[in-house]
Image: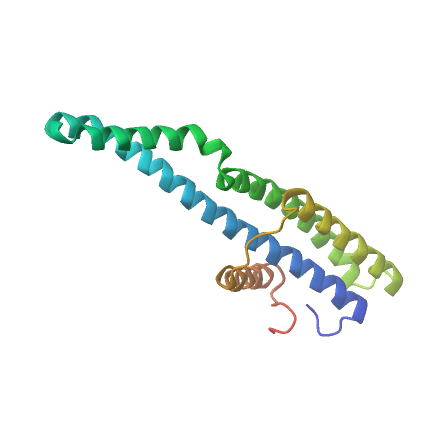
Length: 175
């Protein structure tokens, strides 16, 4: 972000940065959901694969193996109804929508940063960007996301790296 930016330019830039931070945060959330889903899948695979062999060796514990096998089958049957599965799917769709928005905003940022727009035009573009981001958030996460300071810090760090790579500059307040 150039040190010569005007108030409206800075406002637009901050919104662009916010979009990227939010996209990074939701990706971290999605990846966390994937770990949980993969863990239940591994549980099912281990239990179903080892239960038959264990039953053959330790027939005295057939009830235990039967309970474990039944639990694995229940997990498999309800996995599509678990909130983690739905949240992961919504997070993936959210990220796709946000990254498309960011591509458009980055393209528009060039004209904003070079002074092609008046202050009023920049603020109108900022309003549009903010509204689109809000619409994407409410479409995919009407109830919001869990708050995680760890994910927030990681998301900000990823956004910083992204903007350093793309523009050779950090984000406002961090330069």
